[in-house]
Image 1 (tube, rainbow, N blue to C red):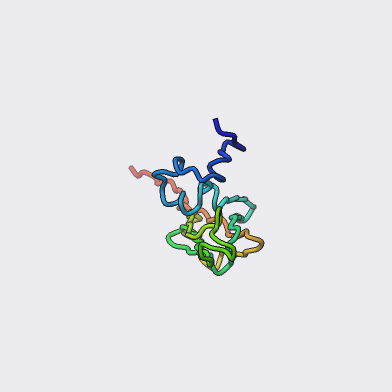
Image 2 (cartoon, helix red, strand yellow):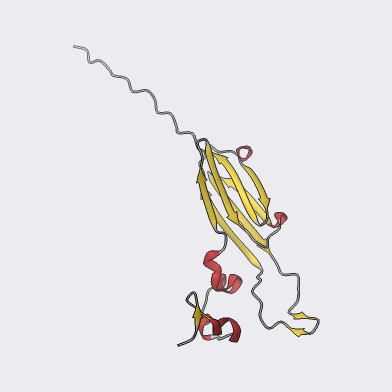
Length: 148
């Protein structure tokens, strides 16, 4: 049995055991074994709208793109490593930083427009504020009198 911290093997990280990564998918190769934890998101409801906070540590503002289409807000972030595989003293032995892209979509309503969404990016956290979709007003129900 291998020693572990929080259910993860210490030897997988430090010794580079290949058995665990054999046959893994692309996301796992791009983001490592923590791929499921990227783009952590919190959604807060306010009286008149919502606040969406997404963790994007290590990204710059110009590496993030927001799109609104058919009521879906899509957040995409992409970056590449600018270094080659060696430092001044030799090859890199262990590297956890990654290059790649990630995307997440949320349905916020077809009546929400781009100009209704406010976005700001500070300290690796993207914050989006947008109004609640106004409910579609149903026609007033009227009673029809039957003649005769």
